[in-house]
Amino acid sequence: YADLTRHLLDETPEERAVLALFADLVRAQGGGPVADVGCGTGRITAHLHQLGLDAFGIDLSPGMIEVARRDHPGLRFDLGSMTDLTLA
Image (tube, rainbow, N blue to C red; front, top):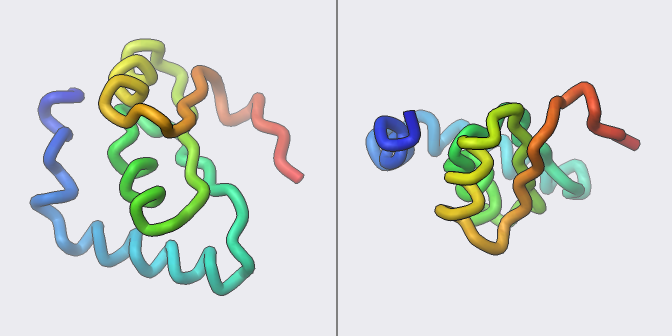
């Protein structure tokens, strides 16, 4: 899965456009942290970070979190469930 999706954003300008619009909407509301729930390999988390958002990822799969941390050092990736998140 990680190898199959590694360059997916490069091939899907529509997805990049939707993420850019999402980033604009988050900034218009004052910013704040963004949770990429089910982040997998972290490609969306990293892209949101490149767009200037305070993004972090969470996933149930230790293998996916390992890949995300390896491929995107310096970004936050947590192993766990979205139901464990404390949101304020």
